[in-house]
Image (cartoon, rainbow, N blue to C red; front, side, top):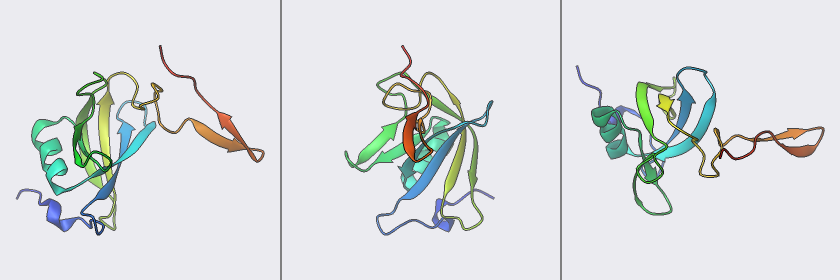
Length: 119
C-alpha cells in the first residue's frame, strides 16, 4: 500500500507546515511549507523539497547553498495537519547561516540570541 498525501489536511492554499528535525540530535532546525507535490518529490528523491510561498515554486533545501537535507523519516501528527521530517542536515539549516532557525528565546521578558551565524 503506497502513501497518498491527499489523506493529509492542507490549508486553503494547499499547504501544510513541515518541521525539520535533526535525526541524530533531535534538534528542531526549521519550519517550512509543503504541498502534495513537494511531499511526493521529497519521498521519491529523499531530498527535502518545500514549497516557497514567496517565490511560488519548489525549493529543494540546499540546491543553491549546499546546505542539504536528506530525508531519514517522514511522519505526520495525529490530526494529519503537520509534518515532521527527520533529516540529516549538511551545514546550517537557517538562511541566516545558523544551525537552527529557532535561535531567539525570550528570557526574563527580553529577547536573547542563543547562537551566532556559522562561518
